[in-house]
Length: 527
Image 1 (cartoon, one colour):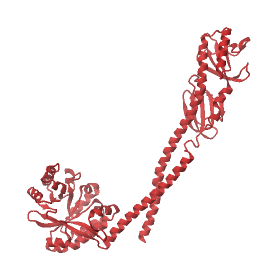
Image 2: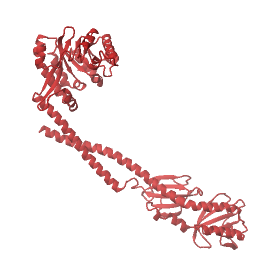
Image 3: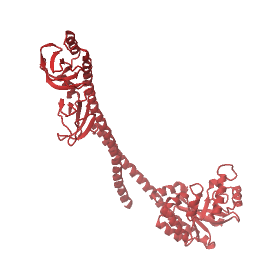
Image 4: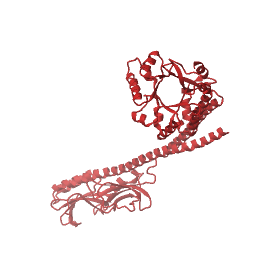
């Protein structure tokens, strides 16, 4: 019942954890897509404005070139002058009329011919450069026209009339269906000269007068969200193209993409829930199997003797755990201890190991009260109050009790230093296992209450061989002697290694040269 309840609790937890993870990841993904799509849409709007500019400016450039060349035409309106103006009108359908205006403001001739009576328009501006005015109604064609003009150095003005129908057709929204409006406006006032669509301007934002390209996104005076892009004409800076598009769905991707994204989100959510549930079941399964093995007494201790090389006597043991699996036979710790560390069962396993050792070794301790007993401990166990209590219980029985940690476990938690000092105060010896393979230093050896160093078997194996580890072994032995630390050599497998170590003052050995790990019966016989 408890396991089923735990399973349901984990399933609910996995459901919400998966939702949070997927929501976070897909939220970031959607934000990225939204921003990218929005920028793409803005670029598309700007591209449409550029198209309008290209279409209009190409014609305005042609007209401007003609007006520049008009500096050389005869202002007496000779037949050649009229013919020249008429030819330009015939070649350029966007131009309906060319006219010549005197410095007093009288139109004296146009591309249709010389006027019988000059027509007063207005005095040409003294400003140089291309300018516009209008739209006006052409006196000759009686159609609305847009006027481009230049004042010559002699004060005469030459102008060109462009029919507004041609410009409106260039701006027509049928070419730009995605836009709300397209307009050509005066950059000083913002008043549309030509307009297609519903023109509006942003609230609380001064746009005009304007001298450079501008983009604005916000609420407009028609109470809608819009994106606006304005770009002045290069040859007529007083004019600018303005395009606007609704910004309500500016960043929203295609509905098909949204559907695909939603399906991926749901699939990822479901997939992650299944993966987490599978992991929990596996974790629960491995934990249950190991706890069941403890309950059925399938786990047992073996004891690796610590031998005094001087008299060849066993002075203590390192306690190791084994599993007599009903199907796979005897399993070493590598098959189940890492899994126990991951799922937290290492605590129950270690408590059980100490209980077994207390039971197995009591008869031996009756004859040898100073018999050394050593347990492998990790940082997690030292942070568990129940394990510390069990160590204290074991210390009452094992007078010479040692715990072995790796360098990583010693340095992993600041609290461990305080715990180790408390254990040392209780008379428990602290040893560093596999010494020399981690990242120890003199400072940490001096600052932590470490009594004993176990030389890693890789250094012992280098004895008699010419490799890089050989000098390290001698350095470790020399350093331990200077720091007044006791030494135990692991992995002693040959007489040569035993003699080498003994000659350098390493008296306590552990390895197959003396004994393999023994069960309790074999240990009693060896003693």
